[in-house]
Length: 256
Image: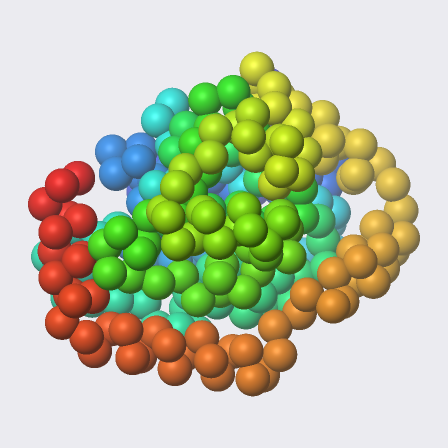
């Protein structure tokens, strides 16, 4: 039985479970939508990263998705089409671990099934990425007249530029095996949840001061500058004002 210190109720779209050993498990809990993120889920993620950052008892976090089909299938385009509501740039950045909120504690992504669009962006901003054999990683945005500004900046830092541009410009998905060869994921395993817990337990057993200082030093060159944040906001505003973006979102919603 899990030794749970605290957990949020089942009605939450993103769950936070804190274990007694300093490991926090963050679960996107919208399996009926393949864990696609609506605006409340993005807001909830931001609140969770802030809570993890502020809680001295948490040493490492795992990010995963519920169900068998997807880690996260991106933003909830159907919600956008239905309500016309979109997350603000600030909400989007805060939803990404360590971007809108300073987070020195390591975050492990446990990927399975579809990890695309915003889901891939979430994974990319985790410090370690473990994948199940059925994981599918990709960015379909350009196919639908959309853009992922944060990922266009970050993906070429994670894998060779040519392969990053292939994913972004061709909207080409990667299998877990391909992602492992590219260095986009650390390992491919049968039971990704169990493996993520093993990795988290190991990190949590080390000095939190040493772990967090090491992460700060290792990731210092990757921090978003104010200019990059402004560019992301400007690109987002420009794209959202265009008819082809709206038509692409509508078409994407009809196909899913």
